Image (tube, rainbow, N blue to C red):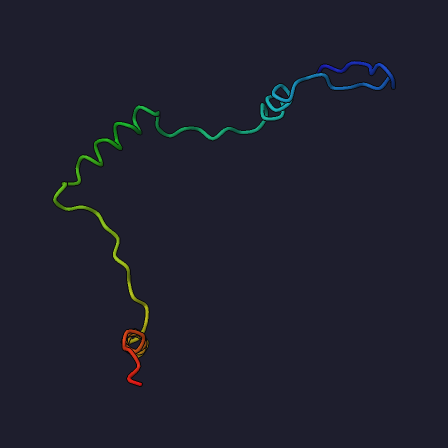
Length: 87
């Protein structure tokens, strides 16, 4: 560690850059090992996406969680909003 005496206070100061301090702090930490190389990931992703036929696209379907009574009430409210008052 690079310590240097201060010019005005004669205390020891750390003169390393932020990058050097971060590298030293993380040097003892455990690193997560990569399971697959970038080349293997790219090859697998390309092959996986190629297996899906274009005629069968993937899509998400929205589920309606409301009860039948709630759906009927919403339909009634929409119909009421679209009708003009008679008088």
